[in-house]
Length: 260
Image 1: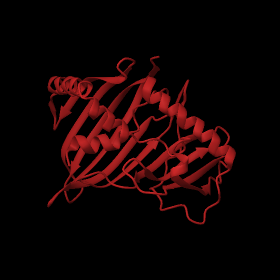
Image 2: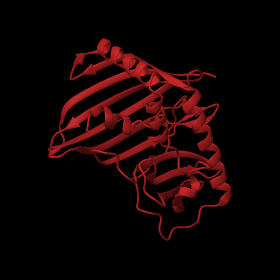
Image 3: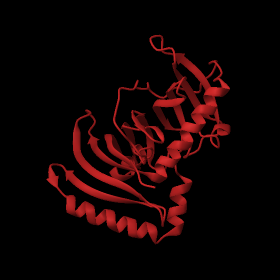
């Protein structure tokens, strides 16, 4: 499994419009199916569906700057490879796509920004010229389980309530049928605002060459479309045959704007 593939898995929810960060409660590790937990109120699920729909709009219309770090780790958990990137992602209307401008790319201490810029341009040209590839990418797109069209695929339950801030509850979710585009985990949400505060998840069915990925996303940026991701981190393992890799990564997202 390539580092690029693992990084893509970890940042799949970062294609959004963002604003100024604030402190949001971090989610715990992804739980098992929310068995024997309380039912989620219908009004809360309806509100979260609206927030999830706005997140889909962010994917289409939001521009942002991402500063990310990706490390490969050895058996002792020490980094053996380190990649740092700063990029600006801007949506385009026709064709519906994203223009990725690499601002800086450092690989194991060496500045390889120019090479990364060339590769980014080549990938976009290739993608735009391949409708089948675009369709495949859309098919594998991950969506929040609270989206109205996604909710029937999942089982939800209230796992706990924040004693210090009772309006904040943790909702567990698991797909009824595992799939590569379905996730399992939990989310802290605000019952009053009916928006997601943070999300912790893993794939319900791992993609090829991926053994496991844990992703955490903090929705800490208020925008005109609602609260959006401000930070994310992931830890994943995978490989081919006897070659196994361990990666971890993180990203901070800033400078949001809604383009159209």
